[in-house]
Length: 310
Image 1: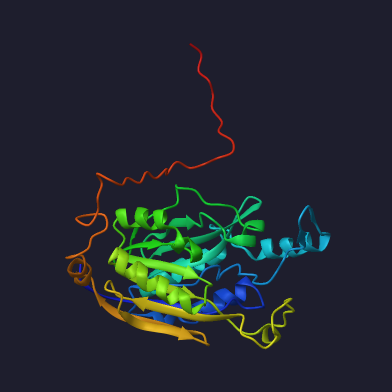
Image 2 (image 1 turned 180 degrees about the horizontal axis):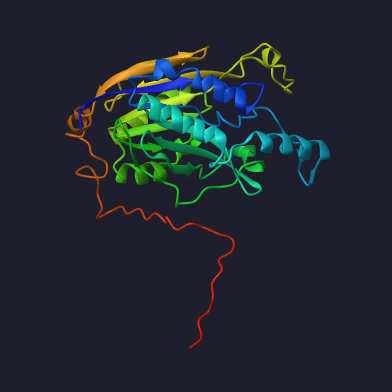
């Protein structure tokens, strides 16, 4: 496999017109993505990230208005066998580009914040469900489990996906490093300046390439939203998508204040060179002192079986 690759982050916002309009916005970048081996898209870009929404919840009770809001949000989520994912698979195939994208996944009556892996030849191959929704995200999203922690072969190399504040979970990072991740994909909505330091730290710690794709969302006034305690003309999510090399050097971005596509040409040999003096799951580890155990068993509420007669 060729060592020279091109990787990209697509920074856009969900359309206020709904999931289909957001999908069309993604598909409009098809020509610009030609020649990219891997593109990463933000957290919850299909289905949306309802920043500032309280869903009518107060401690001890829920308002009917919140249930109505949740139903509308539920309807914007995507089914993994649905037309949106099929359209992304077709785009991936037509331009020979691997895709990692953040979606709100509808599974039964539960929503998950999920990252999908789409292969040009095989279509949708893997998913990662966010292990721990942050703060009030827990009102609307279920928790993932250890069965969706893949490191996936892509056109650019072995890629993992860790969503937003999951990147602050040290044990999760170690589990992904141990699986051999070469390209750390970080779909997010965290636009704080401190996020850039987090991404550089992970690149240095894991000695891997990092691609962080953040949403850009204009001000509530521009989107026709009314969010309590938020100035109507202040940008809601300001972006910050960035691509970083395995020694912490910034290769592209960060992109703030607008939608857009950033790309970087990389050489996979840089990973081996960077690990000369630090390999956190190899020569820089101390398995005689520290051990991490990861439970990758799918967790299900109900298991059915038929007991055989003796």
